[in-house]
Amino acid sequence: MWKNQHLLAVALCAGAISILGMGCELIATVDRSRIPGDEGVVNLCADGMKNGEETDVDCGGPTCPQCATAKACTEADDCSSGFCADDVCCDTACDEECDACAADLKESGDESGTCGPSKAEAACGEPTCSEGVETSRGTCDGSSVECAPGEEKSCETFACDPEENACFTECTEDAHCTLCHVCGEEGECVLAAAGTPGLGCEEDQACDAAGACKAANGQECTEAETCGSGSCVDGVCCDTGCDSACVACNIEGSEGTCSNVAAGDEDGIDCSGANVCNGNGACGLAPTEECTTDEECASGNCLGIFVCGNFPAEGGEGGGEP
Image 1 (cartoon, one colour):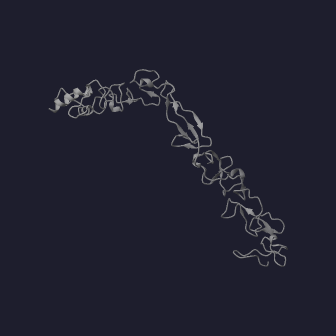
Image 2 (cartoon, helix red, strand yellow):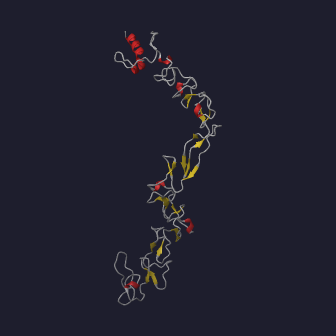
Image 3 (spheres, helix red, strand yellow):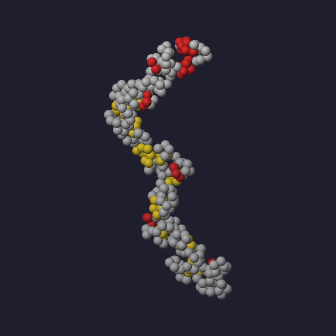
């Protein structure tokens, strides 16, 4: 009895009538193929219509026969050839960059189902961005399967955006900028100050004023041109020119930073006459030299006998008698 009701429902579905509470969509789903032993039941894989899960008329999908070439498909299993390209069953894999199997995608315009060269100027390949150079998608020439390279464009002061395969066009952080550049206030990448470490340079390097990586402060040098800071002082790259008296750039523990030499130091220091360093980056009279004020003495102490006192002991106060 169910079969008779089902057949009646199928017949009436064309008039949008629902029988026994079953909609047409449900009937089509239930009766996907012929019921064994019942010659009267509709076989949707041979009804001359594209319905159910078919990819083309009466073929493709999980239950109907495979489709011939040029028929629509969504995957290789839909096709008797075993190849689905450009959503049609194809005679070959047709998977080169500038291959096409659908008629409207081929330069020749030949019928779908036979692989041939893609239309001229069709986009191919993927955009790339590497080492500050953005390359757009390539193009097909209409006669070969090769993809001609796309156009290259320099990112200039910006870095490559790895998610978009393109250059950043504005920045919100230094990582959006190219080597030795930092993100400025208005979203533009600007040159970093000379001597700035990091920003794409190696661990023992720093940026120079032109945006190149040179030796970092504290590294040994013989010429200023080899230093990121542009200053080679006392045999090391230095953060400044460090060219006044009583300062040096090779003080142990502070190599690369211009620092005051110790009080009383005379070695290599350009203090004239009876002067020595006062420990604060300036020269003053050495102990035992005649003085009239404390300021004249490197020790900061002009004794009552009008001679400069000694430097205070480490951690002590005031210079005593020489």
